[in-house]
Image (cartoon, rainbow, N blue to C red; front, side, top):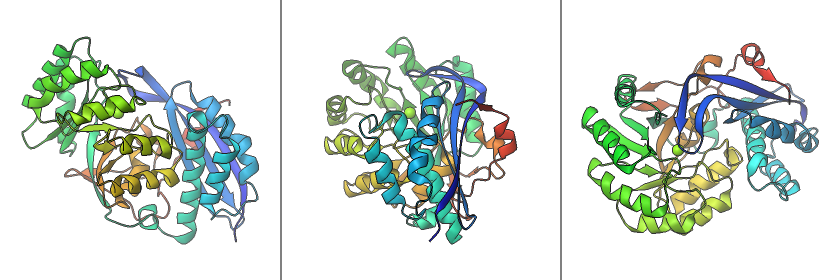
Length: 364
Ligand SMILES: [Mg+2]
């Protein structure tokens, strides 16, 4: 039995190659990343991370660094479910979501990575081993782009190998949003799929109007049209049968996904392991979706999510937006002919350039 011997937590502030804007988040010039590195008594290492908007990482790093350190050091590193439950239970009063869920994610990924590396097995095989080839789509963040630049972004994604492209909605009027979707649909080749993400821009009544306006453009899905916790609103909008709905990046627990799915509020559940507590709950959400006859898609962190979707028979789409993180990795994931392939390297297989990352370190 190997025990966790050392733990390093770092808060990094990384600039984005190009500033981007989405409705709920506003303009983003950089992002925070909290990393957790573990070493066990056999010398096996595991690394995990979570990402947040710029300036939001300090509380997450603090939770991972102090309260969780007490739980992890000296513990059997293979008992991931038990360790996850300890983190959840001991912090449920100020947790069940929020910064605690993000901190748990960074730790949980490090534990799974460590387990994979110890066994010499890639995560996608360890978690279920369905199909290493996963359909990927370009999750472009382009709300602030003028029309010409928006369309250029669509073309660039197709040239980069994607067969599916997402654009952002939430301009000042629905008419402008509809005009931009129409322009993109006419601009992209007919065989390229199009999704749209409103990032919570609308009320239920506005979404109902938007769906009627957008229906002719054959969207694969409309994502997060309303606030993430308006479950009745999601159920009502889905009952209209206009455009399939994706949601979940702003849900932070398995019970929240259970409520949304049980209410019939979503066609494409979209968990993000970096926001919902890690790989452990993500896989439960993926199985929950499967049990309800639904697909599962991922949000961000594609280098990690490719393993999770490759483990799930109901995997549909891997969202791709690198946030420039691939600059700090030895072998970043690639897309070919619309698909990404989970690597065969042990664990998550990500080898960060820690010296370069450390240069971006800020105090916790
Ligand atoms: Mg989204």
